[in-house]
Image 1 (cartoon, protein in one colour):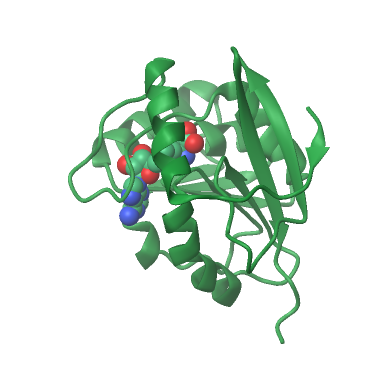
Image 2 (cartoon, protein in one colour):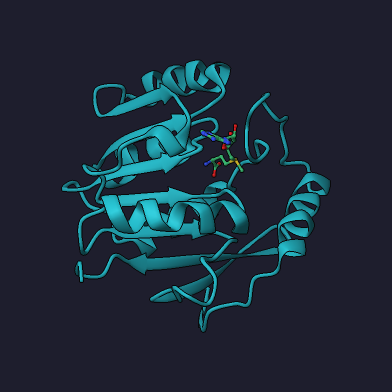
Length: 190
Ligand SMILES: C[S@@+](CC[C@H](N)C(=O)[O-])C[C@H]1O[C@@H](n2cnc3c(N)ncnc32)[C@H](O)[C@@H]1O
């Protein structure tokens, strides 16, 4: 793991990254109406995302497009946080609830079958993303509007463009692949 400057995202990067992950065997399927397909963040990368965001028991961690719930469950199980997963696929929501129960954190996490763009984020202190560059750009105004100053956003592999450079970037190795993880801290309202 090492600190670097911000990367320069390109639209083709989204496709290349998702194809690469698919070839590595980590891809699932896409639910009708989903803006991006279901692809899991590897567990090592999940841990580093939560470390980079300095998650503690005082945090409420949202994962927008929460897949199988792994980020929210890890935030509760390993960092003592509370968590909310927003996922458009109700089957993945049901699976996430079951995984949370097995992990013993069902009382500290909530999973909702909803569109992430319709979700109010005002009680989040940390937002996790693994979506796409285009989705991050669409989300950026909502994040800046609804999150309180000092809230942290961590994104696996996709940044927010040149208009909002990350405060920190790390690289995490898994198998023979390198993941970028980006951190932003929401600035004071102007
Ligand atoms: C790349 S996966 C990431 C899963 C998980 N966050 C992780 O990192 O392992 C993106 C997830 O977003 C969900 N998704 C796509 N569009 C969505 C939307 N508009 N609202 C809520 N969830 C959405 C997909 O169904 C998929 O499970």
